[in-house]
Length: 333
Image (tube, rainbow, N blue to C red; front, side, top):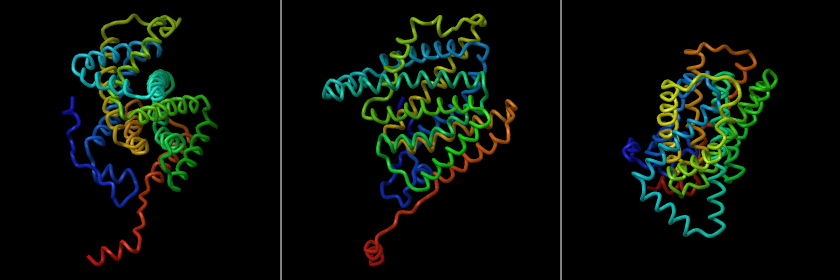
């Protein structure tokens, strides 16, 4: 599995001139950045397998996606990653009672947040429009950065606060036109932003093991209620095309990118992940307009423009001031 992450080996310097995470991504890439970039690029094309099963209920798609992904991850973990599983168990046993409860809480919470995120996103892509799903993940990085500030005490600069304010205006524009779309966008964005925060808190544990546990927990909650997730409305019979699409969705568009993303979170800050997350919705938008020929309103167009403006402002480079004494020292050398 490790061969996936050997694109770059240079470690970013902590003394970089720019305080901006984006600068490190561009100038000093390493295997963690490469993993995150690949994850969000893959997710950018997830609309295709979802649209392939659009005539099935969203809950039914979620049910089999979780089932297939859980079985795949469990197989990988128990056959090829027993050492990691054992190390995670030993690390858990060595923790204090308070930290054990914390691990259990955030593992369960992360799994439930992931389930909500998947379900709502499936519904949005198949029954509302791709634009709404794309807007969610344009908004998500800003929310992730804000949550990182509120919950993890990660610093935000003045330009980033301005970007958050512009994002709020953008949401207001969406809300004045289509409040339902805004609700679903916020639900998708917040569920994934909180999920990222929970995983950042548990970064010392093996991410693939945690993801396996989370999907087991999620399916344990879902398993007995298949009829509920299938719904009462008439739906097509399950066939090989459905299972094939779910297989691709579960392995190529679920296990691989989630593993890559969680691997990246071992070293990258929430804000950095938030920057790289823009890859996903930008690809979604291109697919929505160029392939599926979706239309948009003037309010939405302005809102999308404001979100892109907030992204630019959020990522403006800020140079760190070098003290006069240090300048004198460098000049002397």
